[in-house]
Amino acid sequence: MTKPRLFSGMQPSADSLHAGNYIGALLQWKQLQQDHDAVFCVVDLHAITVPQDPAKLREATRRTAAQYIAAGIDPGSSILFVQSQVSAHAEAAWVLSTITGFGEAGRMIQFKDKSAKQGADSTTVGLFTYPILQAADILLYDAEIVPVGEDQRQHVELTRDLAQRFNSRFGETFVVPEVRIRKETAKVYDLQNPGSKMSKSGESENGIIWLLDDPAVTAKKIKSAVTDTERDIRFDPATKPGVSNLLTLLSVLGGSSIPALEAEFAGRGYGDLKSETADAVVAAFAPVRERALELLADPAELDRMLTVNAERADAIAGATLARIYDRVGF
Ligand code: ADP
Ligand code: NA
Image 1 (cartoon, rainbow, N blue to C red):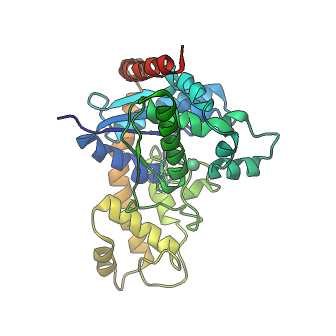
Image 2: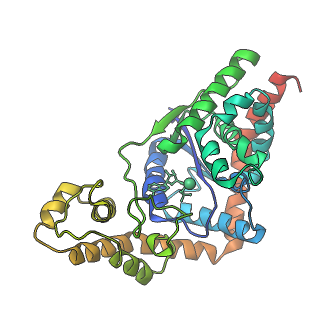
Image 3: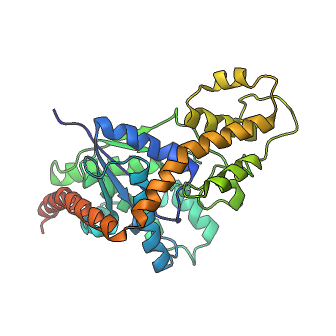
């Protein structure tokens, strides 16, 4: 019995992933890999759609891969590889770009938002064609399931449209993937600005819990989290975003439900909530951090593992690319 193929990836855009990436992506990937034929990618080609420092990108790529493994992605049963090491991604993206409408690509909300922020002169064509590269990432592996956040829905829908268009124009070639939006997924917010999601590009360094932070730093950040002027510990993201965020972290990483935590903390203060949350986060992240640092201490072994995995990825992606090239007349 074959398991359904799943593809997902994250950009190596910082030295460390954060609590949002861990809870919103890695924890699920770890579970999903049990009953899926899972392919996880460090999407470094995507990372250069905004200006990059080459040495930092190389380091961030290795560190991101190490954190995938440290968080429980098994590079033996799943495939865990670096996108730029499999040349089919860029090649398939080129072909797909020739069946994508200019207006269609221009309707991508992420592009519109990012390019509006950057201005036309600093916006690259690479940022514009990014969703087409993402479509190639998914289609090359015949992925049936693509677990993403809501913000990526439109890109996976474009992927489906391109797959169907190619299939009807050139004959059955691609599996049309399904978007898997995980609604039940907890969102993690910035500890200092609990109205905004925790993000690598977040403004306040103290608001982000980095997976590779020293445990003492993690605890300190959580203990200095912004809350509110009330006293009651209730889950109510609209009016109590800071407290609700702490409850989310404690619930997901400590394993108690939110209602159970509300009952447990009835009549107790924010100080208690912060220190129990800090303990739960440190208990969850310290072993991940240690494992990641161990992997990073042996870069040759990590690179060897990534090379082996890139070869496994290439075997699948290369076969799909051959099919694509044959269909279009190469
Ligand atoms: P960032 O916003 O830090 O650049 P990405 O957009 O690269 O993060 O997200 C990578 C993955 O991590 C996605 O699957 C996304 O859903 C998840 N993720 C990112 N930030 C959060 C968050 N604050 N809460 C929950 N999940 C998150
Ligand atoms: Na982002």
